[in-house]
Length: 278
Ligand code: PXL
Figure 1: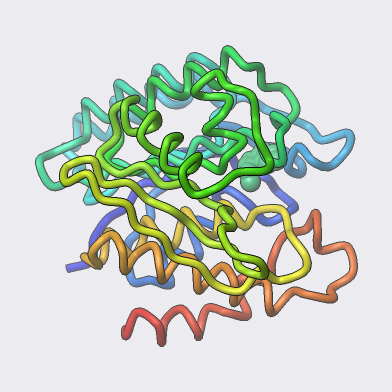
Figure 2: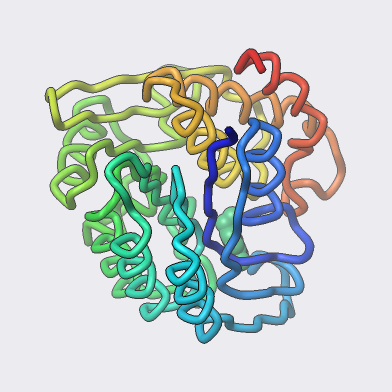
């Protein structure tokens, strides 16, 4: 039987990110993918003049229906959330739908390169930290981690600094804290994780390609969530997600305007399927 994942984030109608990335990737990994759209935007918020329809008031009726039908999930994966209220609703959602074996995966998507995405405040970031407390795994980048912890973003760092941040993130409460977009060696980019159950760090890197694209955090998070749901151990899941993200960037390098449109993850799906051996 297929594993069932529910992904809860916005639909950006154009500009590949959030649900338009999570749904196809997790499905391609062989899981049933349910969604709760938190908002509908004409395009993600890095574009100018986007429309934004808030769907907060739909979340509780959807959850109530699912509770009545006794639907269960193998994984719950939250990404971009648009308001304090949505964060609180997600806490309730976890409590309502989490069983002993449910993976709770939180990507606190809200910032990059030292700045918050349009519409977010440092207080919102701190509140996102309270959702991270309830997760099995969290996957912020360094900007998101800094805002959640209320410390200045430091673009220059060493391994000791990253380990210190990971321990502080783990103190928020998640079992596994992961920092994405970490570079500890020239020409390389990767992730570092902290497993607080045995006080263990894990670092994995791949090539640092000379271009960055919007939405790669969502590609990484979706793949990692899909791999964990498939039963891969966490280190292997992080490797698969890192390698697939790099492969997606490789497919997109040189594409005009793709910085905002997102990566051609579609072209790398055969790689992903081979990589997970399905
Ligand atoms: O990729 C993260 C993301 C998701 N959803 C929306 C966004 C962004 C990043 O800007 O604007 C609406």
